[in-house]
Image 1 (tube, rainbow over the protein chains, first blue to last red):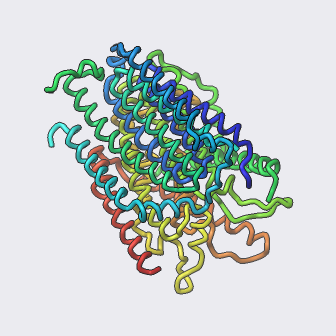
Image 2 (spheres, each protein chain N blue to C red):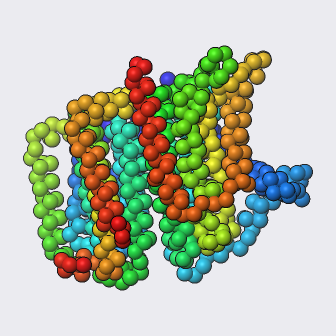
Length: 172
Length: 100
Length: 346
């Protein structure tokens, strides 16, 4: 079946993602921030589905929303929330933050407006990647062209596991 | 059909949200979540470019970014627990001594 | 190629039927559990309402609806209300990609016997079940009481740990079928060995994976012997201590709906789905696959209840050691061996 109502779904999902993103940085309560971030992650998974990347979307939900964010929530529940809520949530870097945001935004806008290559893309229709064989093709890339990167990533994970145990355990 | 530039604008805005959160928040967990937001903004542009150029390398990069995010979350949260155990605070401004 | 309108209408009809059947099944698996555990413990179970207590679920439902809904004053209100809803939503969502039979043609509409046939069905189910932990964790946190918080913490740690061995045990099946689509996985299990042993994955090299799946699935659904998040002897009722009336019933529904999803998944992945001996008239040939599927799911649910009536609860350190030191290495070993055999054969 051909895709239907893509603009509607794009605006819905991107609206949710933006709402989540803004709530993440404005909420005082860390649990609320985490939930807003989960909303953003799920909306992004939907956008990945629209971009013909079903496997990435699935991994996004399983790994990010179901794994990493559970870890965040676990730690937030472990540390006492009332005490940290009474502390100041925002530091006095409003000016720094504002300047950083404006500079970054200006950079993005400049790149977006001036870049010739990007300008050519705006009207171009996107290629429809084959959805059925998405997983196989990713596997071919991951275990073929990017084998070294894959191995380094697995080593990184191993180091992270050991590091986490060493840091968090009271007596080793 | 939604053109790729829309996705790129969204990814830029998400990245910007992450940067602002990183700069203005004090709670160390919120700072971590802002970093996750930035990583996700980048991931979105990777996937969008993968769809545009019909090149799956972009999707493979997303996996590598996710691995880095997972490793960062595991070690970072372990550090948070260690810091909280010793100082009983999550405020980054108060964790300003190099000894525990 | 069917039109969008007919697709939407057919999907709506199927969704309504699926939700209705699932909720009835949930209600009656509660009845079955009380009855079977009763008989295991030399009691009768429910007998008063209707013949064999068959109307008991109805009476329970009415009771849950009309009980006073207490919201304790110290809770974080929004999340306290949202948590049971999240549990139910994620528990009911995963049923949408589970096929219960082959394609059928009813009133001129050719449609699969599932709400939607997607090529990453297994990924969706894993994702949705991994989201299910939020209902429990948030209930524990938002109740703002010690028992609930401990229950929520236990649940999130336990579910994240067991999810890994659950996922790894499924990958062996995926390697053998070469697809994420549940329909393809079931189709890869048709046929028999030596004339009488069915070619189900449980008999076809994935026996170890099946037992790893069984144990991690019990832990994922918080059932005995892994029901530490709601251990009534130590945590009162864990994460749903502060809940009453319909909100409590929602957790109950979510737990049983998750059990049914797990049973359906085990049937599809390891027990050959709707494959079974088929004979008789045309209408029987159409109905029998669905019957076999439901019969297998029933057997799996009965196993759940049987184990609940038999085994005591783990200690928490035993639970974690079991996940990380036994199940996880076993699942990895199974994965490596399966991959090796498949690679050598092809």
